[in-house]
Length: 170
Image (cartoon, rainbow, N blue to C red; front, side):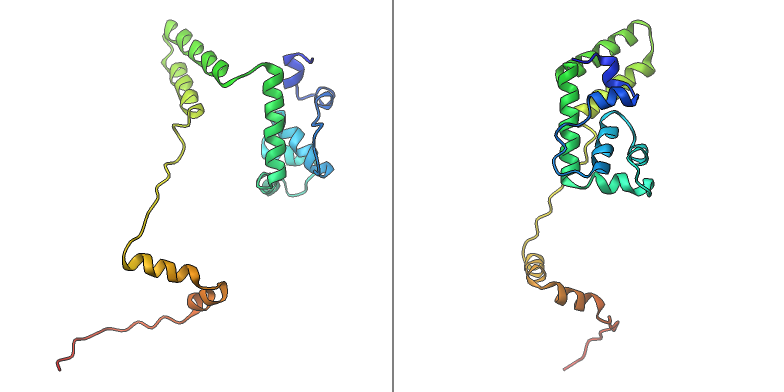
């Protein structure tokens, strides 16, 4: 089993020993990208290391592909297993660092530790709000959902007529 230093090393020889073994149907460039990301490179740097021409956008595009996402999850899980890391161990390590920061009176480090714990616990995740419509609004939504793409496009492209209404006496 490799030591921790070789797992985190940016050296190609160290990475090659731990290169993704289960790349499935990834292309060689995609496998190289996953390998670079698994060892800590940014999306842009990983795209460059893998040989992509448009490094500014390729990483974002690649990470939207389910097979890339799955390969990254697999590689991160392998690394965590090799290092013996669990969520609990990581949290305990951060809590220990916070305690040490308290002892030396370093509030900035304490805050950084608590921020990391908040991220791990998902406290910064966006809130999901579900809006349910009722009455006439629900009927309109239902009718809109039943329209074909062509019908929706026709409505979208239709000319809007702006008129003013006035009341007429009978």
